[in-house]
Figure (cartoon, rainbow, N blue to C red):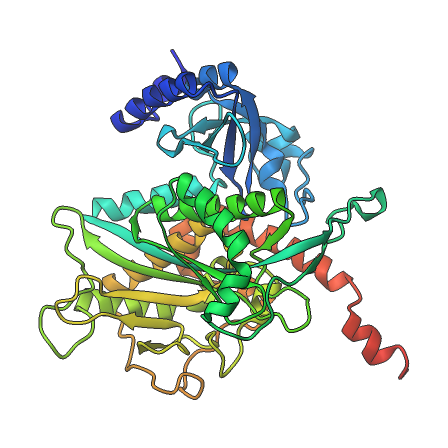
Length: 478
């Protein structure tokens, strides 16, 4: 009996998808299939199997080392994996042991930009069938399952900004290698600052056309591609989708755009604020709503005039605001991302909401009788792990519903309204999560301590580096 059957891991829908997958592999004569799983940073890792081996591994899984869960953003292993418990306090994680990547057949795609290649997203399990508790796709699925038990579905639409540059020097000499290696030299595809102008779009259109065609061919629900305010900056927006789909779309989008651009001599980055002259920070705005499973009715929508949100929606909004500081490490998980939070900009700096106001953290859109009523959280950065970002939103929002938390009045002057300030640094955000009893209970203390450990490792490396600012400030003066 296969691993999948032995542990009852697939639904009937996944079983049917596995059969279709096998037919597609044969009909299209695919040669290899990439098995990928999103790690703790939302970066896809995995292995590429020849098609015959991949088909055998669909139900039996493919091994991968547990050290994949022990790495920070430099890909350094920051847990003592060769000690008892591997630094995780779990015998299954010690000694760089193996776990199994188990494909989700519903995620199967044929890659438009790589010949005879398929692509599968995987969940990660121990040999006894248990999901690895540090695998964030597993974690998000458990949050969605809890939401479904309450009779609801999570609906999300994505607005994701990024930069696409012309690649000038990939920095591939041996001296440029390292952990991390030297970043590439790039040049602009457009100057700024001409938000949504035809001229700027046409300058970037040659590469955007390439990206658009492959993204659509990949089956992602692309809605629009727009030129953003800054030089060489663009935005992808996606149609609303349900449950696991929007998070999967986000990890596939990031990986796809980077791969497609690299093959054509460009460099795409979802880093929030690249250190390049005149470049503008990028954000990730998450549009979200909760709908009833049986009827599809929007739980945020009011049926009468006066209020913008239903009592359910107001409670959910109150939860997002109440837990904003502790959730910031999930919405903005990099040191660089906090350089975006600036007063009097298009990014928030405090936990407030407003009706159709782009200066607040939560922008409320819709109204009485509008089935598209939703909350747009503008706090996120494009580098966020979507599974953790969306899980944190659902958990915080439902806590607000359960406790009928009052979000307060709409803020018309977002940078002057008295409210809790968002963390100024990743260190502030990590401390807010570490001390937060709500997320410790909702996500489990084991996961919170794990995530805090990884983020602290990044912070310590950052603090050990002497910055250009320090050199300029002190070297001549003292």
